Length: 163
Image (cartoon, rainbow, N blue to C red; front, side, top):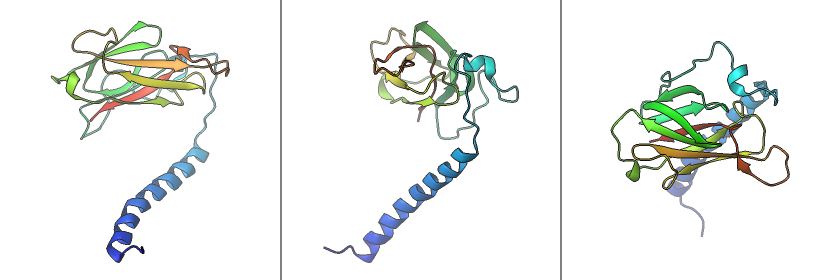
């Protein structure tokens, strides 16, 4: 069944921004120097002109967000009062705002630049993270040997948001 004009118009309106975003990201990717020294943690090699620490993140429609380097040091945050690593690869984030953490979804992603190796993943822990009341957990895993065995690691930089 052929699509009507309005259906094609809606599909085009939804598809076009994705294409533009993808091509823009591809163009930016070629311009970025992605070299990393795997022996040095990102916190030691972060550029001096980058804001370090709590605050500095502008995100008007996000309640809690952050960019954390492989050493667990906040690069930029919003709505965060503390970040604590309680075990290898286990981070506990304490929001600075009053929020019911049982009613939110945390979105996490690996940050390439602030990670020490390529084979990395990050996961949110919505329950039983060991972080206690008033904090949410984030787990970081890596496979620096490229053997398919991911283990908890402190070598992964990550970002997170709570919309």
